[in-house]
Length: 312
Image (tube, rainbow, N blue to C red; front, top):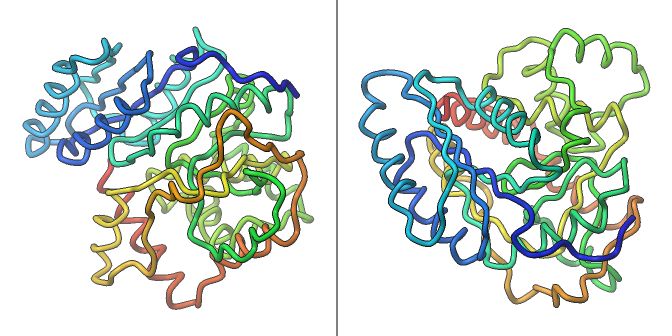
């Protein structure tokens, strides 16, 4: 693994947008505060007539940016979330070796981009690292007492403000038939090591194909098959305004909230990177966060399904 941080601005940001112009305003403000220098915007086309005005407003916001000159790819047709992200990253990786990925309802802390670039540089040669995330789920911080690093390795894919490399992305298999065959051949696979909800999500998204917009679940399945990890920070740098909207469709308030944690932010110039291995204590607390009751798991799953459909 390399130890030198990448040069600021050398890694492009891929921003995926659809019709959420109100959330997008804050997302763009957060990216501006992150001092990014390369922005690629992938704008999906309207699914129906009702979405046309919102999509147009989103594109006006992007074209009106005065702090950066984005490269925009505007679709005429509606690809849907999964195809938009897959085709967008395929396009971006034709000319770049790594990328930071943000969706239109995700707001990142000012230090996120710098952190992501440094982590990308450090773990570039570690094939068992599939990517980087800026999200720390709100599990108990007691597990981090006396923990000697600023990141830990988790076996769970996270799509809310993340980063990866061209060679890791190209290794992911998105064909459900091929994935099903690989999963069926692995009797030793334990999806629950990435969270109590992971087996259900893989069954719904990959096996039964009833969970739409779930490109990230395919990524999670690939990680489990290849015994890979995501680099996860010990402080949270992600807020997701779309999560609240999605969970409201279940008629219940979410059991937790995401908020930046600047009070726990380390000095980025001296980030303490963990080895590519599991820390049993931290990982136990992390996975425990997803060990919801059966009822709460169902509520969360329904909310996730409707949220994904809303993003199409």
